[in-house]
Length: 208
Ligand code: FE
Image (tube, rainbow, N blue to C red; front, top):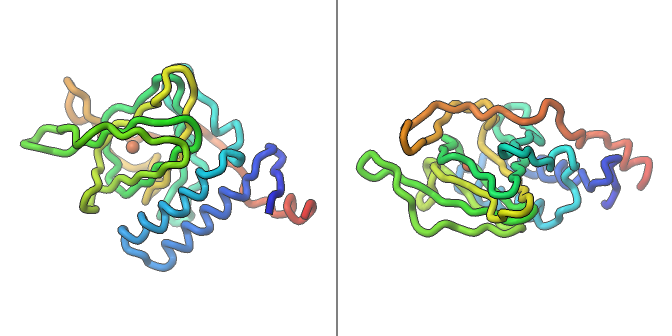
C-alpha cells in the first residue's frame, strides 16, 4: 500500500499502527507485553518519516507542542506527536501510566529520575535518542521509570517524536516537579482541536 493522503503523506501508516496497537490491547496483554509488542509497532512507525501531516509537526516559538493524533474509543491508549523547537524541553514530569516514545525526526535527550530519600535524583546517564529509536516509561515495570525530562537534542532545528500512552494522556492528572516549587499538579491537554483523518478509505479505494 502506498496511497497518498490529500496531505501528501502516507497517513495509512498511522492507521495501521493504531489498528495494530488496539489488537495488542484486545489480546489482553499484560503491561510488559504491551510495552514489548508496542515498541515493535512504534519502531516500525517511526522508521519512515513520510506520514505525519505538517499540521501536526509545527513548532511553536515559545513551547513544545503536543498534538493528539489518535485516541482509542475506550481511552485505553492515545498517540501524540511532540514537536520540539530548537532547544525546547519539558519540565521534570511524571505520566502515571505506561508510555512509549519513538523519535521520528531529529534527536532528543531523555533523563530519568527516581525518588531517593524523598527527593528526585537523576538515574544514570542522560540518554540520546536518535530518529528511529524507541524508549519506554512506566510507574510499575522493573527497570523503567515514570519521571523524566525530555529535551530537543538540537539547538538549531526542530525534532519530532511520536508517543503512545496507556490512557488519554492529555486528560490525566499528573505532576511536574520544579526545583523551587516542588510538585505541581498538571493536566497537559493538547495543542490541537482537530485530528488527522486516517479513516477515509475511499481515497485508497479510488487510487489503488
Ligand atoms: Fe514524558
